[in-house]
Image (cartoon, rainbow, N blue to C red; front, side, top):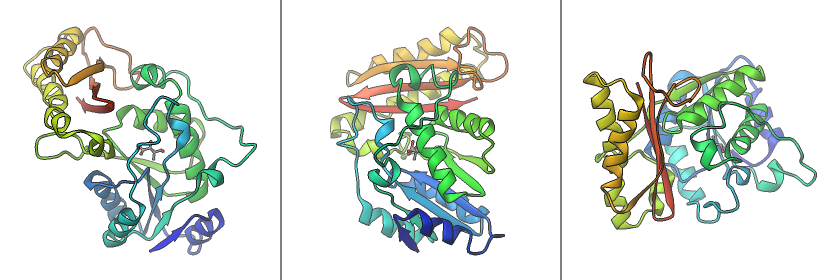
Length: 277
Ligand code: PAF
Protein backbone atom coordinates (compact mmCIF):
# COMPACT_ATOMS: atom_id res chain seq x y z
CA UNK A 1 0.00 0.00 0.00
CA UNK A 2 1.39 3.40 -1.02
CA UNK A 3 0.75 6.26 1.41
CA UNK A 4 1.42 9.71 0.03
CA UNK A 5 0.67 13.37 0.62
CA UNK A 6 1.89 14.26 -2.87
CA UNK A 7 -0.57 15.10 -5.66
CA UNK A 8 1.84 14.26 -8.50
CA UNK A 9 2.54 10.86 -6.98
CA UNK A 10 -1.20 10.11 -6.76
CA UNK A 11 -1.68 11.02 -10.43
CA UNK A 12 1.39 9.05 -11.49
CA UNK A 13 0.13 5.90 -9.72
CA UNK A 14 -3.40 6.37 -10.91
CA UNK A 15 -2.34 6.62 -14.56
CA UNK A 16 0.61 4.15 -14.46
CA UNK A 17 -1.63 1.60 -16.17
CA UNK A 18 -4.32 3.73 -17.81
CA UNK A 19 -6.92 1.04 -18.50
CA UNK A 20 -7.19 -0.11 -14.87
CA UNK A 21 -10.34 0.97 -13.03
CA UNK A 22 -9.91 2.85 -9.75
CA UNK A 23 -12.41 3.04 -6.94
CA UNK A 24 -12.06 5.95 -4.51
CA UNK A 25 -13.32 6.29 -0.93
CA UNK A 26 -12.91 9.85 0.45
CA UNK A 27 -12.83 9.90 4.27
CA UNK A 28 -11.96 12.13 7.20
CA UNK A 29 -10.27 9.21 8.99
CA UNK A 30 -11.00 7.54 12.33
CA UNK A 31 -12.17 4.66 10.21
CA UNK A 32 -14.80 2.15 11.28
CA UNK A 33 -16.74 -0.76 9.83
CA UNK A 34 -18.91 1.65 7.80
CA UNK A 35 -15.84 2.91 5.94
CA UNK A 36 -14.64 -0.68 5.57
CA UNK A 37 -17.89 -1.64 3.86
CA UNK A 38 -17.31 1.15 1.28
CA UNK A 39 -13.70 0.04 0.83
CA UNK A 40 -14.89 -3.53 0.27
CA UNK A 41 -17.40 -2.36 -2.35
CA UNK A 42 -14.58 -0.52 -4.09
CA UNK A 43 -12.17 -3.48 -3.89
CA UNK A 44 -14.82 -5.78 -5.34
CA UNK A 45 -15.80 -3.39 -8.14
CA UNK A 46 -12.45 -2.05 -9.36
CA UNK A 47 -8.89 -3.12 -10.20
CA UNK A 48 -7.43 -0.66 -7.67
CA UNK A 49 -8.71 1.24 -4.65
CA UNK A 50 -7.62 4.62 -3.32
CA UNK A 51 -8.71 6.16 0.00
CA UNK A 52 -8.14 9.73 1.14
CA UNK A 53 -7.83 10.74 4.78
CA UNK A 54 -8.30 14.47 5.21
CA UNK A 55 -10.21 16.31 7.92
CA UNK A 56 -11.49 19.09 5.72
CA UNK A 57 -11.52 22.33 7.74
CA UNK A 58 -13.79 24.19 5.31
CA UNK A 59 -16.80 21.97 6.01
CA UNK A 60 -16.77 22.84 9.73
CA UNK A 61 -18.21 26.14 10.96
CA UNK A 62 -16.08 27.96 13.57
CA UNK A 63 -18.51 26.77 16.28
CA UNK A 64 -18.31 23.11 15.25
CA UNK A 65 -16.14 20.18 16.33
CA UNK A 66 -13.08 20.46 14.04
CA UNK A 67 -10.64 20.60 16.97
CA UNK A 68 -12.16 17.59 18.72
CA UNK A 69 -12.89 15.53 15.59
CA UNK A 70 -11.35 12.12 16.38
CA UNK A 71 -8.05 11.23 14.69
CA UNK A 72 -5.93 8.05 14.50
CA UNK A 73 -3.80 8.09 11.35
CA UNK A 74 -1.57 5.14 12.35
CA UNK A 75 -4.60 2.98 13.19
CA UNK A 76 -6.35 4.03 9.97
CA UNK A 77 -3.35 3.10 7.83
CA UNK A 78 -3.04 -0.33 9.48
CA UNK A 79 -6.77 -0.86 8.94
CA UNK A 80 -6.56 0.08 5.23
CA UNK A 81 -3.44 -2.01 4.64
CA UNK A 82 -5.17 -5.06 6.15
CA UNK A 83 -8.20 -4.40 3.94
CA UNK A 84 -6.03 -4.49 0.80
CA UNK A 85 -6.20 -0.84 -0.28
CA UNK A 86 -3.64 0.19 -2.94
CA UNK A 87 -3.20 3.91 -2.32
CA UNK A 88 -3.88 6.29 0.57
CA UNK A 89 -3.77 10.04 0.01
CA UNK A 90 -3.14 12.00 3.22
CA UNK A 91 -2.81 15.65 2.19
CA UNK A 92 -2.05 18.50 4.58
CA UNK A 93 -4.31 21.53 5.00
CA UNK A 94 -1.62 23.65 3.28
CA UNK A 95 -1.56 21.35 0.24
CA UNK A 96 -5.33 21.44 -0.18
CA UNK A 97 -5.76 25.13 0.66
CA UNK A 98 -2.52 26.93 -0.12
CA UNK A 99 -2.22 30.67 0.50
CA UNK A 100 -4.25 32.51 -2.12
CA UNK A 101 -6.81 29.72 -2.55
CA UNK A 102 -10.08 31.36 -3.62
CA UNK A 103 -12.42 28.90 -5.36
CA UNK A 104 -15.60 27.48 -3.83
CA UNK A 105 -17.99 24.95 -5.35
CA UNK A 106 -21.45 25.84 -4.08
CA UNK A 107 -24.81 24.38 -5.05
CA UNK A 108 -28.02 26.31 -4.75
CA UNK A 109 -31.16 24.33 -3.96
CA UNK A 110 -30.24 20.90 -2.56
CA UNK A 111 -27.85 22.39 -0.03
CA UNK A 112 -30.46 24.68 1.58
CA UNK A 113 -32.78 22.46 3.70
CA UNK A 114 -31.98 19.92 6.47
CA UNK A 115 -28.23 19.90 7.14
CA UNK A 116 -27.90 23.12 5.16
CA UNK A 117 -30.33 25.00 7.37
CA UNK A 118 -28.34 24.08 10.50
CA UNK A 119 -24.91 24.15 8.85
CA UNK A 120 -25.14 26.84 6.12
CA UNK A 121 -21.48 26.68 5.07
CA UNK A 122 -21.08 22.91 5.33
CA UNK A 123 -21.88 21.73 1.81
CA UNK A 124 -19.77 24.36 0.06
CA UNK A 125 -16.85 22.94 2.04
CA UNK A 126 -17.78 19.36 1.17
CA UNK A 127 -18.38 20.05 -2.53
CA UNK A 128 -15.17 22.02 -2.87
CA UNK A 129 -12.96 19.41 -1.24
CA UNK A 130 -14.61 16.50 -3.04
CA UNK A 131 -14.25 18.30 -6.39
CA UNK A 132 -10.55 18.78 -5.62
CA UNK A 133 -10.14 15.14 -4.55
CA UNK A 134 -11.92 13.94 -7.71
CA UNK A 135 -9.57 16.06 -9.83
CA UNK A 136 -6.53 14.72 -7.98
CA UNK A 137 -7.45 11.00 -7.91
CA UNK A 138 -9.54 10.88 -11.11
CA UNK A 139 -11.33 7.70 -10.07
CA UNK A 140 -13.57 5.49 -12.18
CA UNK A 141 -16.01 5.18 -9.27
CA UNK A 142 -16.42 7.06 -5.99
CA UNK A 143 -18.00 5.56 -2.87
CA UNK A 144 -20.07 7.37 -0.22
CA UNK A 145 -22.31 6.16 2.62
CA UNK A 146 -26.08 6.52 2.71
CA UNK A 147 -25.84 7.76 6.32
CA UNK A 148 -24.93 11.17 4.90
CA UNK A 149 -28.02 11.16 2.67
CA UNK A 150 -27.99 14.83 1.76
CA UNK A 151 -24.26 14.72 1.05
CA UNK A 152 -24.88 11.94 -1.51
CA UNK A 153 -27.60 14.04 -3.18
CA UNK A 154 -25.44 17.16 -3.23
CA UNK A 155 -22.44 15.30 -4.64
CA UNK A 156 -24.46 13.46 -7.30
CA UNK A 157 -25.79 16.86 -8.38
CA UNK A 158 -22.26 18.29 -8.48
CA UNK A 159 -21.02 15.34 -10.55
CA UNK A 160 -23.86 15.91 -13.04
CA UNK A 161 -23.51 19.68 -13.14
CA UNK A 162 -19.72 19.74 -13.50
CA UNK A 163 -19.47 16.67 -15.77
CA UNK A 164 -17.13 14.67 -13.58
CA UNK A 165 -16.26 11.51 -15.50
CA UNK A 166 -16.98 9.01 -12.74
CA UNK A 167 -19.72 6.83 -11.32
CA UNK A 168 -21.11 7.58 -7.86
CA UNK A 169 -21.79 4.48 -5.73
CA UNK A 170 -23.75 4.82 -2.47
CA UNK A 171 -23.24 2.08 0.14
CA UNK A 172 -25.82 1.19 2.81
CA UNK A 173 -25.52 2.58 6.35
CA UNK A 174 -23.57 0.27 8.68
CA UNK A 175 -25.09 -0.04 12.15
CA UNK A 176 -24.05 -1.13 15.62
CA UNK A 177 -26.01 -4.11 17.01
CA UNK A 178 -28.36 -1.67 18.81
CA UNK A 179 -29.11 0.16 15.54
CA UNK A 180 -26.92 3.24 16.04
CA UNK A 181 -25.50 4.31 12.67
CA UNK A 182 -21.72 3.94 12.63
CA UNK A 183 -19.98 7.31 12.68
CA UNK A 184 -16.58 8.56 13.72
CA UNK A 185 -18.43 11.03 15.95
CA UNK A 186 -19.87 8.17 18.07
CA UNK A 187 -16.44 8.09 19.75
CA UNK A 188 -17.21 11.55 21.19
CA UNK A 189 -20.33 10.36 23.08
CA UNK A 190 -20.22 9.94 26.86
CA UNK A 191 -21.28 6.49 28.12
CA UNK A 192 -24.66 7.91 29.08
CA UNK A 193 -25.22 9.55 25.70
CA UNK A 194 -23.99 6.47 23.86
CA UNK A 195 -26.63 4.43 25.72
CA UNK A 196 -29.31 6.97 24.74
CA UNK A 197 -28.27 7.44 21.09
CA UNK A 198 -30.02 4.37 19.57
CA UNK A 199 -33.29 6.30 19.95
CA UNK A 200 -32.38 8.01 16.66
CA UNK A 201 -32.75 4.80 14.66
CA UNK A 202 -35.67 3.61 16.79
CA UNK A 203 -37.54 6.81 15.90
CA UNK A 204 -36.75 6.48 12.18
CA UNK A 205 -37.79 2.82 12.30
CA UNK A 206 -41.08 3.71 14.02
CA UNK A 207 -41.89 6.25 11.29
CA UNK A 208 -40.88 3.68 8.68
CA UNK A 209 -43.20 1.11 10.28
CA UNK A 210 -46.06 3.63 10.25
CA UNK A 211 -45.40 4.24 6.56
CA UNK A 212 -45.40 0.48 5.92
CA UNK A 213 -48.74 0.30 7.76
CA UNK A 214 -50.19 2.86 5.33
CA UNK A 215 -49.50 6.26 6.95
CA UNK A 216 -48.89 8.84 4.21
CA UNK A 217 -49.11 12.18 6.05
CA UNK A 218 -45.65 13.71 6.35
CA UNK A 219 -46.58 15.58 9.52
CA UNK A 220 -47.69 12.35 11.24
CA UNK A 221 -44.40 10.66 10.28
CA UNK A 222 -42.46 13.65 11.65
CA UNK A 223 -44.50 13.67 14.89
CA UNK A 224 -43.81 9.97 15.49
CA UNK A 225 -40.09 10.70 15.39
CA UNK A 226 -40.37 13.86 17.53
CA UNK A 227 -42.33 12.08 20.26
CA UNK A 228 -39.91 9.18 20.51
CA UNK A 229 -36.79 11.33 20.52
CA UNK A 230 -38.07 13.94 22.97
CA UNK A 231 -38.96 11.14 25.41
CA UNK A 232 -35.21 10.59 25.88
CA UNK A 233 -33.83 13.35 28.13
CA UNK A 234 -30.27 13.19 26.73
CA UNK A 235 -31.52 13.90 23.18
CA UNK A 236 -32.06 17.39 21.72
CA UNK A 237 -33.62 17.49 18.26
CA UNK A 238 -32.02 19.70 15.62
CA UNK A 239 -34.51 18.64 12.93
CA UNK A 240 -36.75 15.78 11.90
CA UNK A 241 -37.83 15.50 8.31
CA UNK A 242 -40.02 13.51 5.96
CA UNK A 243 -38.94 14.94 2.64
CA UNK A 244 -38.98 14.31 -1.08
CA UNK A 245 -35.78 12.30 -1.71
CA UNK A 246 -34.90 14.32 -4.84
CA UNK A 247 -35.74 17.92 -3.85
CA UNK A 248 -35.48 17.47 -0.03
CA UNK A 249 -38.60 19.61 0.39
CA UNK A 250 -40.84 18.56 3.29
CA UNK A 251 -43.80 16.46 2.16
CA UNK A 252 -47.43 17.01 3.22
CA UNK A 253 -48.41 13.71 1.65
CA UNK A 254 -46.00 10.95 0.62
CA UNK A 255 -46.78 9.87 -2.92
CA UNK A 256 -43.70 8.23 -4.43
CA UNK A 257 -40.89 8.03 -1.92
CA UNK A 258 -39.73 9.69 1.26
CA UNK A 259 -36.44 10.37 2.97
CA UNK A 260 -37.01 10.14 6.72
CA UNK A 261 -34.10 11.89 8.38
CA UNK A 262 -33.08 13.52 11.61
CA UNK A 263 -30.21 15.30 13.34
CA UNK A 264 -30.05 14.99 17.11
CA UNK A 265 -27.63 16.43 19.66
CA UNK A 266 -26.39 14.29 22.56
CA UNK A 267 -24.38 16.74 24.63
CA UNK A 268 -22.22 18.58 22.08
CA UNK A 269 -22.21 15.68 19.64
CA UNK A 270 -24.60 15.96 16.72
CA UNK A 271 -25.64 12.67 15.12
CA UNK A 272 -27.51 12.26 11.83
CA UNK A 273 -29.32 9.26 10.41
CA UNK A 274 -31.98 8.46 7.84
CA UNK A 275 -34.14 5.82 6.22
CA UNK A 276 -34.87 6.13 2.51
CA UNK A 277 -38.21 4.66 1.48
O1 PAF B 1 -18.28 12.15 4.50
C1 PAF B 1 -17.16 12.59 4.83
O2 PAF B 1 -16.40 11.96 5.57
C2 PAF B 1 -16.71 13.94 4.28
O3 PAF B 1 -17.77 14.83 4.18
C3 PAF B 1 -15.96 13.81 2.95
C4 PAF B 1 -16.87 13.30 1.85
C5 PAF B 1 -14.76 12.90 3.10
C6 PAF B 1 -15.46 15.20 2.50
O4 PAF B 1 -14.60 15.75 3.43
